[in-house]
Each structure stands twice: as structure tokens, then as C-alpha cells.
Image (tube, rainbow, N blue to C red):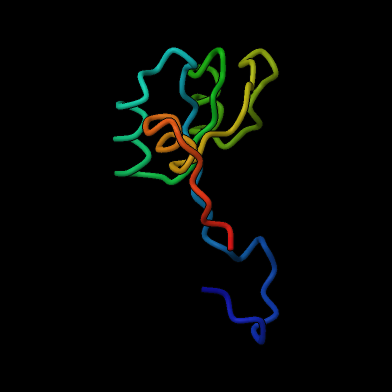
Length: 88
């Protein structure tokens, strides 16, 4: 949790690097990955390029073909074929 009174900058936060996955990844495998490691990942045409760049702490090249961001909630909604209304 971030305490507003600390006046922290974003650069002081511990950030997690997402992992790039292929659009062909099976939803159940993606669910396992999101549940065990990270609550969010991104889909890219060339996840090998994206993950290599992220591990080297450099920007992801456009050749990786960024397609979008997927969250754990997105995967669960796809699997149960219904919308989850938890924003309130």
C-alpha cells in the first residue's frame, strides 16, 4: 500500500515486469501463469523478442508486435463466458 503522506514518486515503487505471451496460448495455461506469478500480462506476436527486451531492461521493440494487455479477470470472464462486475 502507498501512504499519501509519504509523497513518494513512481520511481521508488517496486514494479513487476509483465511477461509477453503468444495469442495462441491456451486460456487454461494463461490462467495458471497469471494466478501463480502475475495478475497481468501482455499479448504480442513475438513474445520471444518482447521477453528478451524486458529481461535486458530495454524497451520492447515494435517488431515484437504488441497486441494488448490481458488481466486475470479477462481470462476468467472468457472461461466462464460472462462479465464480472467488480468495479464498484
